[in-house]
Amino acid sequence: MLVLPPELTHRQATACLGMLMQGLKVHREPGVVVDAHALTAFDTSALAVLLECRREALSLGKSFSVQGLPSGLMGMAGLYGVDGLLAPAT
Image 1 (cartoon, rainbow, N blue to C red):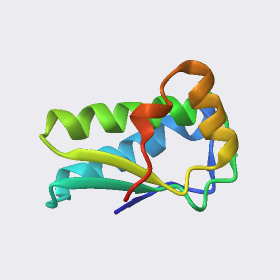
Image 2: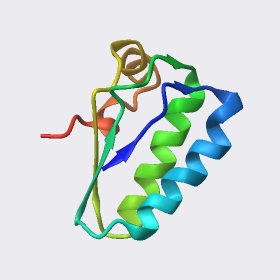
Image 3: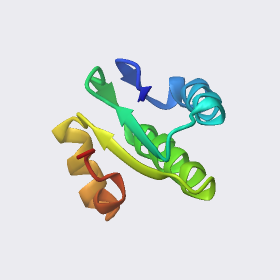
Image 4: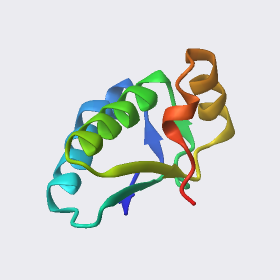
């Protein structure tokens, strides 16, 4: 499982994306789950990071899901029409 930090805004986006990409390189399971429970401060950069992580996971032949996505971020995803791409982990 990959874990998001408590804050993911434009300021942290590049570092966070780098961390997630490193995690994907060593992730051996067929499905990637991102844990967003700790995420409390975010902007649209968080969506960009999650979508890029998803793109990379899918390119590696892995499924992708997010658990614990804050309702505010899910609302933002809905406004941009990408909420279906960030399906909760089952």
